[in-house]
Image (cartoon, rainbow, N blue to C red):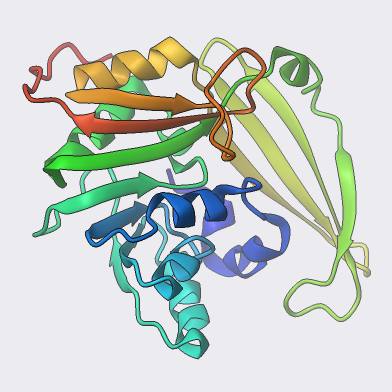
Length: 260
């Protein structure tokens, strides 16, 4: 799960070229409006979703596997007058002495779980940290066969940005390819600096299909409340860009066995 893009010197660039999924902040603000419980945000990163939730008075604990990302969150929160509780941990193995009323896994962080073993371990871990009537919400993108067919490892999307530590604009472009056998999207971001120097940041994301996720949730003791197809709240259907899963712990807990 340790992707280069979330660590070390590159983390300072993150907010400049990763804007999230359109509408996700508003979705969470609306969902937790007047919510009085505790929320654990997994994959909080630099706080793009954490900080507006906290400003709205929501009790959020921010968890991320990157200490570098959390350091930026802390720095961003200070001028906003908020002090988020932050936990540096892995969602598969986290041990927090608290159960939460809600767990949210934001901006496709679940897609950094590359194997079924990792996915099941994370969901079991999340269930242990949820209260009996708690809610789990997480999003993954819905695979588009048309878009995947265009993932030919060619550079596209060149954009010019002024990044931290640079006085002139840096060209940022990217390329994709898909491993259908292992359901992994490989992506690279390329930074071309004014002096001609280049940095390339690799990124992997696991892609999922609808009933595959449903099976993972069933095996780990979750009941599905809703499956949405976008952050506007429309039901999931063919052609939906997202899969937003809203779940609760089931009354009975299936036994964990036969991990793939």
